[in-house]
Amino acid sequence: DCIERMIDVMNQNANCGMVTPISLTDDGQVTWAGGLQAFPFGIHLTLPANQIPSSSYQSYWANGACILLRNEMVRRIGIMDENMRFIFSDSDYSFTARSRGWEIMVCTAAKCEHNLNASSGLNQNETINIIKLMDQKYHRYMVTIFILLLNHSPMMLHLYLHKLLEYHTLILM
Image 1: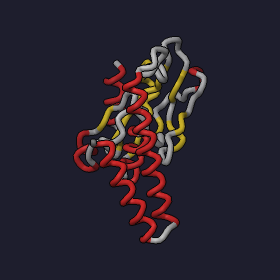
Image 2: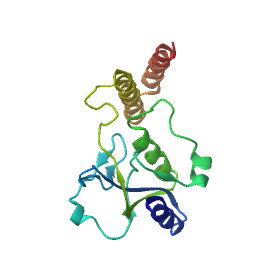
Image 3: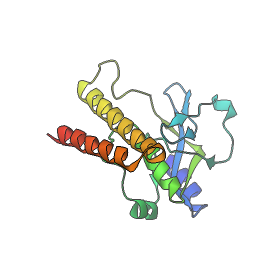
Image 4: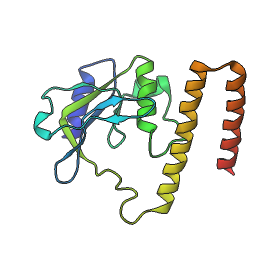
């Protein structure tokens, strides 16, 4: 039912590259009803369940807990950045899609259950927490490069990119 409703929204809009449902906790609280910003950080829109609009609407980013991707969009923009495996990948990919003309829709008729931070949970899965820390560090580098592109000289950017390559070399070892 959830996937069929998201497919319906995508089929109604040829420019729609991503559709995502409303995310709820197991007790029905809304944890995500759209994104207010995709870059440099994804900011959640949360609403009481009774205030969610009845019709689908555009969002700045799609929540990675559940996303329907248009095949054509993936062929045109590529896959998600493999350096981000848990966090920021959804907002980063959404930013890329939107910058290339694709729309992101929230299907309000579709719901999925997603408990925030359940992957690390009370047991504190050390492996997942390490991956999340690596994602955060990589994302911080990417945001800094973006800022450098806007504000600094080519020489500063060259030095920073050199440091970024050193960082990737350490991660791959």
